[in-house]
Image (cartoon, rainbow, N blue to C red; front, side, top):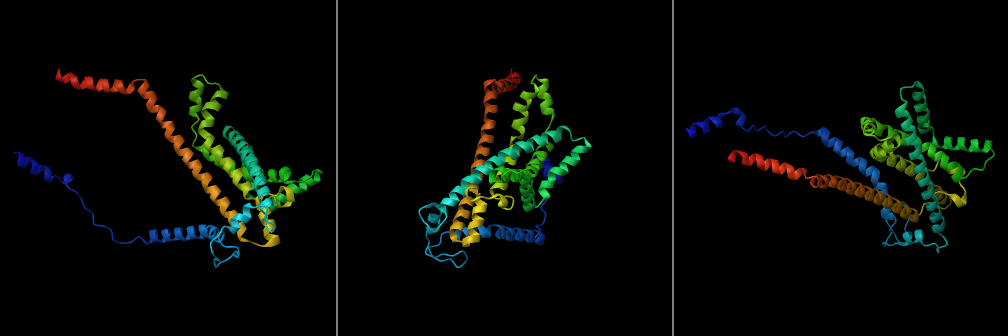
Length: 328
């Protein structure tokens, strides 16, 4: 009887394992796209890698191949040693500090304005005038940078106010960064659920507390993205600031451009580019580590609260009681 039942069970078609023949035909479209992706990566990162390699040449190294050895840190020392007369370590240090201050200020202003604009559009998007305002904001994205610099300079000249990298270049770069931050915040609001705010108000929270404890924690990543856009665009900007430069207030791109136009490209500039690239990668790595740790520690209190309230023990006790009841 057991043998017959086993044979019938084995004869059922749903119990048979269907083995499909392996498709040995190559997907040439997939291989082609993979090759194109590799070529794109080489085209994108090969100049950065070559720049880093050439920065470790000896004293007689040049800005192009072939590599002139032996290996040395002469160009890196010229970047940091202010006592060398023929190099520009002092000017580069001043330009780095100016760019850092300008970029931090631009990032903060862009994040604040982009967040405020996106909040206004979120509340009043149904008006027709909002569409006009949207395209006016995007107009800064489509305007060439040099024309934006010319217009800003003419405006300040008409007001008889002196132009400088702080008074005018900062404003031009903020205008340039607002559309990017605005688009980031619109993407954040598109996946934001307004019912969370309604639930907070139903539980007794006023508008300020709802904004501080509910809205901001949910959209802070978008605000931080706006800050990164404002910081990065100002850090790399040249054409929107070139008309406002003064020697004492040059930003890093303007300083590099001035050195290149007057003395040509040298491997110490390759060392500077490699240093800024490595610093950017380190900052990105630190941010990713912090975000990962934050997400990991955010999940831990849920389990601790559950254990403190005794939910797990109560469920286990109910399960044990239900199992022991039939035995009695």
